[in-house]
Image (tube, rainbow, N blue to C red; front, side, top):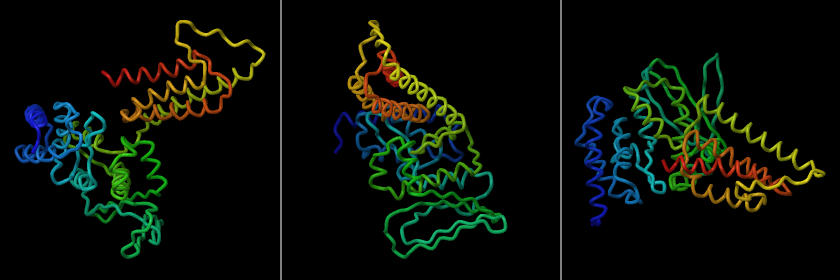
Length: 338
C-alpha cells in the first residue's frame, strides 16, 4: 500500500498531466486515447523507483513526452527514469521501431537490430553498388557481445543499415549517455546496444513527425544523444580553447628565471595543484551527472583536458588560470539552479 505523501504526489501528477494534455491537444497524435494513456501512466508511476524525490509538475512533463509520441509506458515502449531528483524520458527499443515505421516518409517493410557475439558470422560488402550484409548467428550463443547492427528494409526493396563494434557502443555510452553507469547499461547491455545502433540508423531514415513537440520528445528519448554538426563544431572550439590554455601553462612553466606572479588578492588562492583539483572534483561530483546534450559534451571535454594538464604539471598553476576553470564550473552550476 502506498503511503499518503506518495498518494498525494500522484494525485498532483494526474491533475498536472491532465491539464497539460488539454493544453497541448493539437500536438498529440491523431486518434490519441487520453483516458487510456492517463490510466496506464499512473499505474506505471506507482512502481518507479525514486519517484517521490521529483516534483509533480516535472513528472507530468516527462510523461507528456510519451503522449506526444503516442508511446505507452505500460507496454514498456518508453520509460520515466529518475536520475537524482530529475525525471528523464527514455524510449525503448520497441518504441523506436514503432516510431520509425509510423513516421518514415518512405514506407518501411521491416526494421530491426541484432547483436553480434563471438562465434557469429557477420559480413558487410558492396555488390554491384548495393549494400549487402550476411549474418549467421551461432545457435543459442550467449558469448561476449562484439558488436551490433540495425537494418531497415523498405517496401521498394531498398535497404539501409548501420553497424557498431562493441568499442564504438561503449564510446557512445561513456561520451554521450545521460547515465553511462546506470541500471539500464549495467543490467541490459545487449538491449541498450541494440537501441544505440538503431537510434544511429534512424538518423539516416527520413522521419516526418506531426509536430515540433513530437520531434523534441523523440530527441529527448534517446539515452545517448549523437551530436549534430553545429554541436561538433562547438565541441572543436571548446577543445581548442582548452588546448590554448594548456600551451599557455606549458610556456609559463618554461620561464623559470621569471619570478612567480603575485597572487590575485581579489580571487581566492588556487595556486596549488592539489587545491585546484580538489575544488574541480568537488564541483564535478555535484554537477557532472546532471548535464545533458551540448553542455554535457562541452563539460566532458573541459574536465578531461583539465585532468590532463594538472596531472602533467609538476609545479603550481597560476591562480588566475585556476580560477578561470573554477569560474566555468560555477557558471555551469548556476545554470542548473535556474
